[in-house]
Length: 239
Image 1 (cartoon, rainbow, N blue to C red):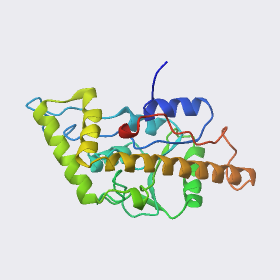
Image 2 (tube, rainbow, N blue to C red; image 1 turned 120 degrees about the vertical axis):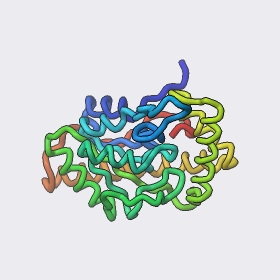
Image 3 (cartoon, helix red, strand yellow; image 1 turned 90 degrees about the vertical axis):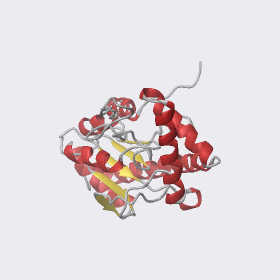
């Protein structure tokens, strides 16, 4: 035996097959910097490095609770991709999409829900349409464990620059960057990662409970199956 993990996209497939409507993770994958519309690493042109998480959100009716796309990604292009594919993206209690390690990113959230009751309404409407797509609910990392945005941005930019100089790319890029960011922040990024995973799981559980209560009371549509929150297993620095 040994450690194992699933991607967000794979977990969505498994959750939907089991009748689970809500699950929590750290952060989703998305559009990497240099993936489209700009030169990629070296002289090879655009990398086309786009996570399958985005396509799965567009076709699988599951609500994913996270702290936003991973901070190493191109956030505006990730949101644009999700908009093009018709995926509702909402942030809980904040006008900005979370910056994963930090509470804010400087990028406006497409939708804002004031509380988990409002989030439950949004999720049920989306899942009951029969269109097949999911919902992305972004929850900011708790303030006591959040990195100040300027510190997070500086560490991310330095790590990305070092990765380019070292020629790191492909599947090795994300774990390399996350490990280097942890070094540059003296472990603060890992502490933020652990805190946000716990907070996301808590929020997902409460969202699932709100959905079940509404369905039981006949306030919303018929349940599609069990509704539980189950964060996928993943090493803290890879969230």
